[in-house]
Length: 119
Ligand code: SF4
Image (cartoon, rainbow, N blue to C red):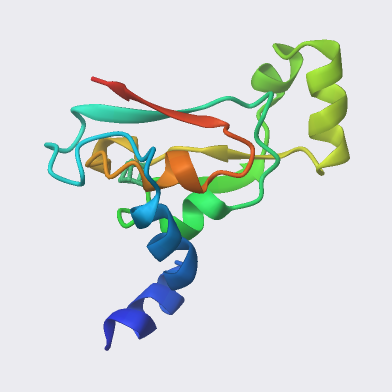
């Protein structure tokens, strides 16, 4: 299977990935970090479940699904209204230990909802 076909099969978006790679503010370690030495952190108050993180992450760290009740109730009132307006969908990182700190998700997210932290 070609790289393009593999990307399509996994739900990745080649154009978005290319733009994110070229972004001057891309943080992290250029995919050179040991797995689990960095972690993406999603701000559920900002996330609108647009899936750009899913489309650019080369290690399938993210999934977008309905927000957990506990996370929803922890949000301030206005953030809860915003989450409801977007179908209560948000990003989670079930495969965070696979992150190698390429920083693509951080610059690809149109809501600036992801940051990359060490450890
Ligand atoms: S920084 Fe980590 S979570 Fe974000 S796209 Fe790169 S590998 Fe995936």
